[in-house]
Image (tube, rainbow over all chains, first blue to last red):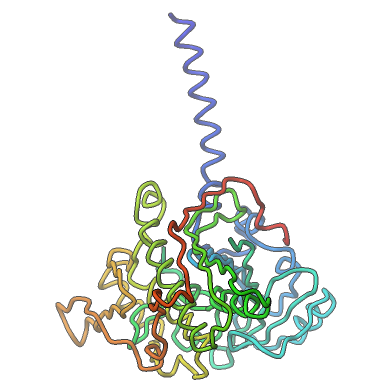
Length: 143
Length: 234
């Protein structure tokens, strides 16, 4: 009987440890949105596309966001800079990554696309707020 | 499921692909729902069908929810059969009817067990009206946001904090649900508003006896577990 209790305790302990590690990942997987900085290592690694990780930091004050849109089924990944509207370094970077500026854009921003994927990258400036940023709009699933 | 942290200043509404704004005309608007990219895709499918030269062609439209890395994906999907020769005005009507039908079904799906354990988004006050705005963003030429009168972030936060999160206020119609300014109207409760004119221009298709549009008998629920990594492009 004592042996059984010991085994049960070990199994429960292992399940508990597994839960502690898996739960934060599940929370991130099913989150509808997240706001985070580069210091939030777990979120930064989990959500941030490579294009945003390598994006020139045009201001020291910046943050990231992730949005999972239910219904139309889309994802938005973004980096937002406070205290600047100078985006020429970002433009150069997008060109170097094979992105091409588009004539039309669904939002009031510059839209860029690459022949290598279906993402729409929007580069915006908010002069009144002295802010700028980049958003990646992605619709991977179409039933 | 909208969160307080998603609220943005109304002046940024036309710039962002995501976020939550409060507008004096439509109430809360979820900009993610209101992009209209699903409608662009649906109208493109109808155009392709018209160009195919076939007497009848099938058009599919879906709404769903997907987890970040595509571990789980579920939603509602429908296929309608259209007879070749639909004029553009009718194509818009058909697209609107498909969107409205599936959006309602998807909201019911979200508010039913077990989905309601992970989301309070089923018929959340802003969902359907934001879907409708997405449709008109695609088919209308107007600069829509000045008409909708979005408010500042501080004004929007004031409403959120007074009325508590919008997931608590359900709206199963495509009409606006307005949250009066609690400072100007103390003890006020949310009330239904009226759609602006530009959002009443298209009538959802209903002439199903004509034989030009054949609805599928059974709209399907799709559930996909771990089958596809939606983040392959990372």
